Length: 316
Image 1 (tube, rainbow, N blue to C red):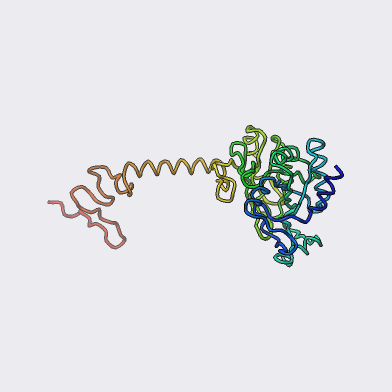
Image 2 (cartoon, one colour):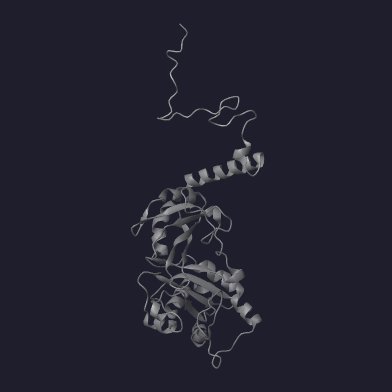
């Protein structure tokens, strides 16, 4: 264990990018650039950790992982690097590292960050992922562990065990959603969709339950308030419904059913009557409104054109 710890310290700054972690530039003189094959091999050993507390440093995360795996994995956790920290606007860009060191975090953005951790093998990755996923860091943070790229298991939530939540405040955290929906069953994972630059919540999130039956009960929380805003809750109706456009979550379930019914009727009418169903539905022999049989138009009654009285014209 002491030898593993020494290797971790030596390899701490050898980190780089994996799984979309595009931030941070490498110093070509000090850091070895990996070949595409080496990068792919390392990515297969890279662990993604979401919802990490902002005040955790690399050492604190390593200790938590070591406690989670125990003697089942005695290898190294190195390198470790953090991404998606919700820094104030003045630290965005090349000043990101300085803002991270000073912990200059925005008040109206995420209360967590993500980490990447490299382990010794792909087999170790699956073991560590299973043992660390769901680890409770504190009252507001439950770690979400996954692989990167082709090794990811939670990139697409199972729609039959998931719900879509809309109209969320910009500073919504995973804990806010867990506090509500854990009343209906164990929550496996939460994904808050955030702006890539500001890290603020974009108003939507997905909640994945352990069991399918929890979804039905979760729908009733439509209208529940989170930080003063009434949330909208619905099932994930699309198979790829894990982004902003994939879920029909902006309508109440009853409205969604009505919308589907109207679409089916419109499609059926189009197939029966053609492109202009309203014009084709006129029954044979039907006359236009305002016309009498024989082609005579119905006389419109106006104030100045009254019909003449027939009185006095009777024959004596």
